[in-house]
Image (cartoon, rainbow, N blue to C red):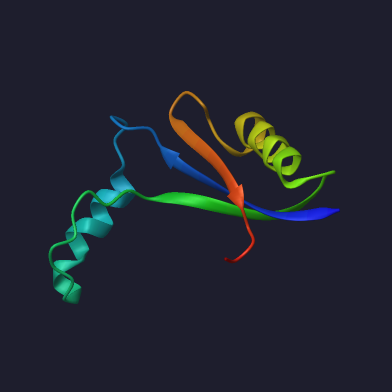
Length: 84
């Protein structure tokens, strides 16, 4: 069975995030105030063939750690891609 999965990749705490800082500085000019601690990241959506959702998430986590992220500076988390 195929399971939809989303992998979110973000910089670890303490790692400089120039993209997030640039976005945060631009927000007041666009009328958005009160937004702080902006962090940028990326997400990957995929379908994974597996016997159950837990196995699909385990496979997505392994894929994220080996290919989609740099584990030295980034965190990667897999979650179900189903709505609900």
